[in-house]
Each structure stands twice: as C-alpha cells, then as structure tokens.
Length: 537
Image (cartoon, rainbow, N blue to C red):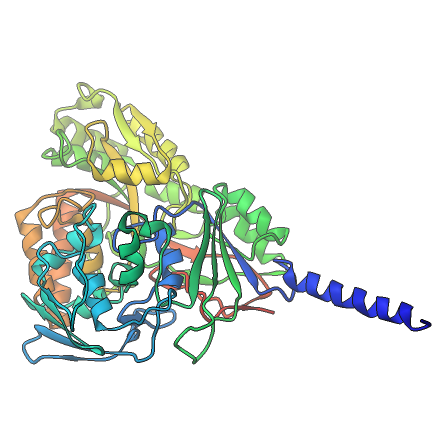
C-alpha cells in the first residue's frame, strides 16, 4: 500500500503523455491541419476542374505516371515503366505489382481500363477476363473533353493483370505528360460501382491517404493508408485535415495561433508578418500560373468586336492591381503562359495601360465614351487562388478603371461551385469574367489549348473560336520536335495578342507560410498538395 502514490503518479504521467500525443497541433502530434480558402467541389478526379478538389485527390489517388518533386519531370507512378512504339501511337504501360485500393480490392490493368475508359465517348476498351460494365456518364468529364482526348485515344486494352496498351488515333506530343494529371487518376471500380453518383463524396484510390470524413464547407479528413504500396518513404502523418477558412486574414491568424499548420493564400501583407515570426517558415515557388480576364465570346459585342476588347485591355491598370493587391507576390502578365515555360513569346509587349488609347479603341468599336454599351457585368472570383489573391477586390479595381472609359461594370459573384458551373454554361448575363489556371504538366498545350481553343470543345471556358488558332493547337499536339513546337506556340501567342480574346493579368509567386514543425513540405509547380513525405517534428 505504501507504493500507491507512486503508482498514481505513473498513471497520471501515462494519461498526460497519451493526451498530448492525441492533441492536433501539439509538438508530437501526427495530425496536420491544412488551411485553405474554400471547400472542394467534388472528389472524383475525372469530373472536377478546381484546385480545391484536386489538392485532396492528390493524396487519395495516383496516376500511371507521376511528376517529380518541385518539377514536371516524369517518373514512374502506378506504372513502373512504359514503352512507346516507333510511330508514336502505341503506349504500353507495365504496372506496379502488389498494389491495393483502400477498399482492399486489387489494382490491376482492368482498373486502369475502367478508370480511363469511363471518360471515353465511344468506349473502345477491352478487359483481361470478365471486367465490368461501365455505367453511362452522368455529366461530361470536362478535362477529358476540353483536351480532345476522344480524338486522341482510340482504344485501351488490358493485355494481362500487369500490362495496359493505349492505341492513339494520332501522334499526341503531350500524351505521356497528360497521363500524370489528376483526371487520369486510377479509381477503385468496385467502390465506384457501388454508387456512381456518390463516388465524388466517398472516393477510393491507391494513394498514401484514404478518405475518412467530409463536413461541407468546414473540413475534409483523410487518414493514413497503413498498407500503402510504396515503401520508399511516407506517409508519416496519421491524419490530414483540410480546413476551409474563406477569409485570408482569419486563415493567417489561425496559423499564427497554431490552429493550422499550413496557410494557403495569405494576404500579401501578411507575408511580411510571417517573415518576422521565428515560429514560421515560408515555402516559396514561382507560380506556373496565370490569372486572366476574359469576355463572353458566345454573345455580342464581345464575340466579334476586337476594338472593344482592346479598349478594355488598354483601359485596365494591371500594374496597379499587381502592386496594390498582389503586393510583391506577382508580375504583370504579357503572355497567358508564364515566362518560365518553354514556348513563351518574349517579343510580345503586353497591353500598355493607356486611357487615351483605350478611348480611341472605344470610338473605333462604336461605343465612344461608353455610349450605347449599357451596364455590363464583371464576374469576380469568390475564393483566393494561386493566380488571384482577392478576386472581388480586383473586380472593384477593374470596374473603377472601366468607369474612366465610360463603361459601367457591375460586380457579380457566387459561391465557388456555382461560379464555376454557371460560367461554364456561358450565360447571357455574363459579360466579363475572371478566371485563371495553374499548369498541370509543364506543357504549353495545357494552357493554350485547354483554356482558349473554343473550337476544340464546348467545355473550354473562354469559348474563343478561331480556325487559325485551332490550327496552331492541332499542329502543336501532333509535332514531336520541341523546337518546332516552340515556334508554333510563339505564333499562337502572337495571334492571341493581336485578337485579344483574353486579357492576361498576372503570374503570381506562390508563398504558403507554415509552422516550423512542418517537415519536408514542398510546393509544386502544378499546384498539387503532396503530403506523402511530410511529417511533424
């Protein structure tokens, strides 16, 4: 009995230790909280297009090929190797062995055929053995359609459990890089077929983390995949929480007070505060991105009046926007692709801010001093993105600039999911709209074709339609020599500058402050959030 106080003391110590370990945010916790500006739209990678969805998918799913850390160099993913035929039209992927989906079902060639084949309009697929019946599409797979993948992939065949053959209809220079993108992630066919409509809320992949919980507009919780196939590193975290905190300043305060570990898209002014805080680090990378303002090319006068488009391009003070809203975290864009990307046209001067010149274009357009144009709408983004820190502030600045030309612009916004859905429908009540892009694979095609070639697909959000531009895009895809492709894209960029279907605003520098306890977190040029090798000390 005389040892009872010592026993109680030891029990108290053990309880204290377990309590500390269980506390998110504590020094020895294995739960990392990622603070972001908005919620995901969905978690089926074939059908989403937004970064808030993909950043979660990045940790649940994997594709046949992967991008190296901090670059778009290709490396093995779920395919350990691949062969390309001499004519460039047959790709044979050799798959990793012993990989399982989070639901315990095996990853194999049939799963690849199912995952990619479900996006095909004409499903020319062959399984090894029985396979599955692929349900009809509930909605178009936007990435697949906008990238003209039905015109690229002719057939997909599972030769055996570990071999998949893609036969292309044409030479497609970016094909291999495209197969590392989120839309090409491999899903569990078994999980999908249980409830195809609800898979976007209950995703199952092969990645380092598995889906656990989604509280709408609050948090998405992932848990460690203890059976993860790649034993070369992590996952080291037991739990990964993506918290939605819409206000930039509130999100940064949550970082400062230790309630989150990583703060996505802080206000530029908060970066200076972060630099002075010894408890914070500042992962930084030049953004492979562009924020732009576009016109509704499905309606007049925007569809055909190039002078009116140029008036607005010269009438918006983009440098003031970058200086005052990006605050040192961006540069004025001259091309709609970043200057770090091959194919960039250095000879393009960009649109000079010149109110008098803009007024001259207004007169040429038939709307002197804005007369006859009427009130227009300027759709402004509701959430911060890598290429646009504060869409509505930028919208207000643009509207003030347009007022000097006699144009009255009304700011319009919606929640992020509605904004993306309505904008894609090209409604008549939309005149100008803000959007942007973070590159997926380091290829100019991924900007120039996907964003601006309206003749390729109705899913292209700008719906700019030009036979000459479409010709450049087709030629760029079907030319393998990179020097020749560079010249094609330089010419295409000159055409965009001359026709002014879109106004590139800025390329941002990406800085996401984090707590010092976060180890090995690396920003990626594609905007991917890759947490496999991240740990907390």
